[in-house]
Image: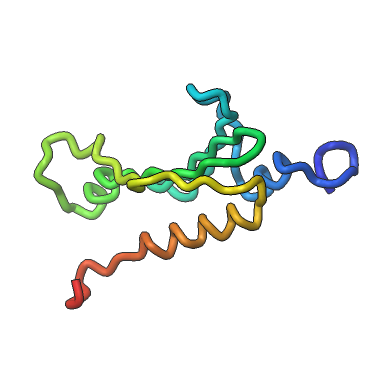
Length: 116
C-alpha cells in the first residue's frame, strides 16, 4: 500500500520503496532525489514530471584511502567518479531499477584482470 491513504502507489511511493529520498529542487526545476547505495556510491535522480534523469557519483578518493592506496592528486577526498553521460528514462520504476542494475554491473572492476 502507498502512503496516500491506501490507494495505488504513486511514482514517489515507488521511489521511496527503492530507498530514494527527496532532496529539494534542481537548478533546472526538477525534483531531486538521492539514494545512498553504500558509503561511497550515491544515485541522484531528477524528476521532471514527464521523464527522469539518473546519474551517480562514487567517492573514489575515500574508497582508495580506506584501502591504503593513493592517486597522483594531493587532495584525494575530492576525487569523484561520475558517468560521462546521465541517463534519461520514462517515469517507470522498472526502467529505473534496470538502469541501476546496469550501472552496478558496469562498476564491477577487477584491477588484477590480465585482460585489462
